[in-house]
Image (cartoon, rainbow, N blue to C red; front, top):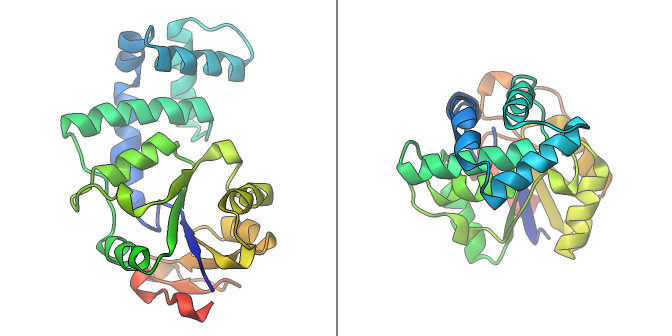
Length: 227
């Protein structure tokens, strides 16, 4: 019996287009000015130290900005970059520049599952802060009360089986009582290797492929009793 559901964001709870067409361009555009304006703030200063550590050398503010922009262009999933993007997005959400996109079926189903005492978690390459901002600023209101917790790259890469072992241990549940939902087969393969149940989301009807994982188009199609 499924006792907890762990969900990816892009292509699963939310539109890939929102992240790639709204959030990422916004962070890249505002990153240089944000870093220069907030470099002495404790949170930003700590991130800049982590950037230098990742780069393996001392970096001036402008060199750090250049390194961060390079990582964005390379689509690198590096923890200090994700943390800084979270700060920039927090500023954007607060200003009302955009709302976090969440599919309506995600909201309806999460509310139903919470009422059934199913614990709901998010695991994304975006920082925990970025996840909380997205779900906290949607057109359906603040959805964070529906969620029991969040995981990001601090537990490991999403294609690494060890990451799911860490999540399993933190949830303190048998692996087969946890369902992981994603639109990426490699992530589902890693989760399944630890004993977790899995479900492949295919929001785009044209993207259906042969897979060993159960396939759904939305949360409305997902029957937990089938696991």
